[in-house]
Length: 165
Image (tube, rainbow, N blue to C red; front, top):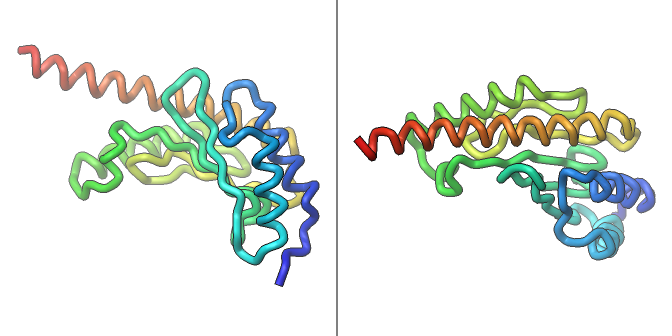
């Protein structure tokens, strides 16, 4: 069974995300268009992409189309440590709570905060999305990523203070 959604809606959102100046899309948009066409023709397959933040250490992970959540799923990831999501500890839980608190300050009609040690926000972009709200979401992702970077810097500086003493 193939999807009934037109490919142009998927490529339109991919172009909008790729055109946002604060994020660099990987793979390049031309390759993503090919992956989208293949995904739309199959049942349950997605075209996955990442965007590196230009001003922070964050990364945005996306899936077009998302089999259960609509046109596109976008997750803002900015781990304090890449291994932290695999650790079950009180410290990892506190980092997850901080990420959720940061996410709450920057949520949009499409995004919600996530209590996870690496993920801050998750956005579900509906098939009838408003490009203005998507731009707002991308802008808020940028600000949330910068906020997380400041938090990480503060945590690391505090730890270093005790290591030096």
